[in-house]
Image (cartoon, rainbow, N blue to C red; front, side):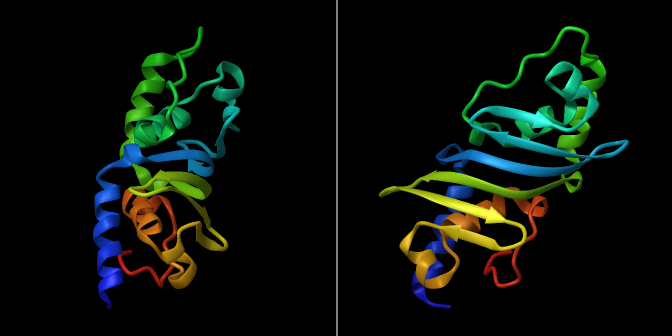
Length: 166
């Protein structure tokens, strides 16, 4: 391993400790609920979940769990509870789901990193892997931004086997 890579690993650790530098622009999640699998989408237009609770109330424990887990990186106010929502049950599920991250699998996402010198856009696609706008990624196909996201998201993503810090 060379000194350039060592520096990027150290920067990745620092970025992972500062998640407020990161902004999710959009993502798609496969979420294993208690009864079924659901798809959750997050983007500039807001949230969407395929579960019946979200269809009825515009909020659900799946979205609530993601809001809790990813809060510093979402840069928006959490959804409000809805009239008729079973808040006690949904909050209990949300806490359990947030602690059981093996239920959550990010299929793809796009984030913006507020870097030390410039902003960078990092994308993940479960089928095709990583892309990043930084120069280090262009030459190495890995960078401090991709490594930081791997640290932050852990088992919620499938890490490519070539990652130096998986």
